[in-house]
Length: 341
Image: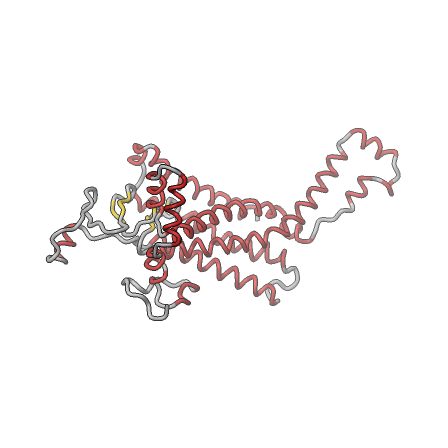
């Protein structure tokens, strides 16, 4: 059992350290980038430990937390079936959208030669001086991918991929399912954690009292019926604590990961309401001269601008509304609005 916890913890540490070493550190020290392997190798290194995290979470749910919440007939009762269905549903959607974010092309514009060949009647167009690709509204050059990306939001260090026109819907959907799924995971872990930690605290308090010389001497002269040691020995651990054992401490990292995903999800929701990408958001911060001007820009963006990014990056990416609730790829590539939305 301890091997599962160790593998789960090591996988998370590897993902965080990999994102820092492969994505953040080269931006701080550009010379480090020349020492790193290719981007495809980096993607493989980052995806492999994540592939171990999801099976470890399923193991913890079926063999630890499900038994703690449904001690009687966890696999044959309605409550056990509900927990199982909801966990598998949230996990399947989160895993699918994460891998689609990693593997989907974010949307690279045509090169200068391709654009001129397909549109011989167009005489003037903007070209990126770094990658020689045609630039349009919302197109930005990614310094890590060495190419422009259509409607680029940012380069995600945890996916080793840019988030742009074609994969933003998967990225935002992953954050949504991960956020609500982790909230549910915190619910599963909270009450067993509190019960277990209270029992362990009592036993630790008992051991501390037993090691105090004055209380030890008092215990020798006291009757067995009134002994503090007898009182604390009679305090049983709850059934959930016996089921969880050392896994009760996983509530703490679950809360930390939930807070991190919640911050990303809420920030991306705020950007969609402002109709901005992260690049646009940073530019607005750097160009303003006062906090009042920043609030004015946000007010105009929030209430007076059309939600172009939400419409084209999310709403028009799937032909039916129910496709957002099942793990299926985007089936709309054009900018025409779907019929049923």
